[in-house]
Amino acid sequence: MWQLAIAFSAVTLMCSDACGADLTPQTVNTATFSEWDHSWAGPDPFVIRVQVLLDRARFSPGIIDGIVGDNLKEAVGTFEELNGMQAEGQIDGRFWTALQRDTAPVLTTYTITGTDQNQRYVRKIPKDFGKMARMKWLGYSGPREMLAERFHMDEHLLARLNPRADFTRPGTRIVVAAVERSPETKVARIVVERAAARVLAYDEGGELVAAYPATIGSTETPTPSGTYKVKGVAKKPHYSYNPKKNFQQGHNTKPLELPPGPKNPVGLVWIDLSKPTYGIHGTPDPALIGKTQSHGCVRLTNWDAIDLASLVKPGMPVEFR
Image: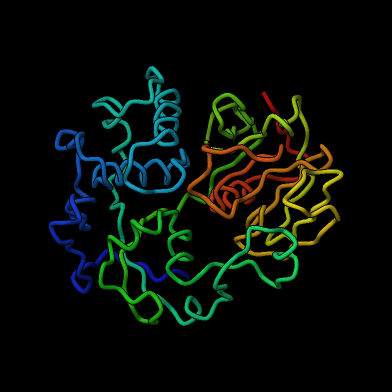
């Protein structure tokens, strides 16, 4: 269990003037649209609040970084569409009125544990698959990177919010995004939209209940068309590389078996589809979701892939359109 609390008195978070916007639990948790400074380009308290609220509602903005980017605009547009507004993808007063129905704080505290410190960390992950295949685990570089991903955050934003924290010391209290999602959401079908670069989940009544930004296909290995089915879910999967079936990576011309881990090419979970060699999966680099191409499959952030995997069942239809 995460050790969370909404008490911040023991955590010192004030940035120096060089940090720009004043990022404290109070400024982020109370940020409003009317006070939003649109001219600020760095991590913004109001944008952080919007991103966390959307994430918690399963309109995922991708990585929480406090910056207005394409993934956030897409999440805003999807939320607007579901709530009967014109899907412009612009944060305005009407959008904010609907979003702030969730009044719970968006930043909370977490106490680092001994388990966090003692995970299987890896100093460096090579880019070459051949070198990866000789490793036993493709893990995070350290506790800070692991914790940033656990709370759906950009690592630099986590550091900004905790400028004096020792992420390697158990007992350290840090400020994190409060991103716990409802476990009661039910999903009946999945839609992968190539043009919008997103994955949508609908319940039995046809209501949209989740939306995730995605990296989908490429010119060389395009994502398929049509409807397929979920075959199953593999957690912490190995990655089987075969240049004759998949793609050519570097100078690797023979099949390779890459070990599991969050830095595995398919991340921490693989949702297997009835289309051979295709699936929905995580990624070793969440900051690039929606900004690069995949090798035909559908790539989500690790946390969104894990979330979706918890909602799907074998036989569930997955439509590509």
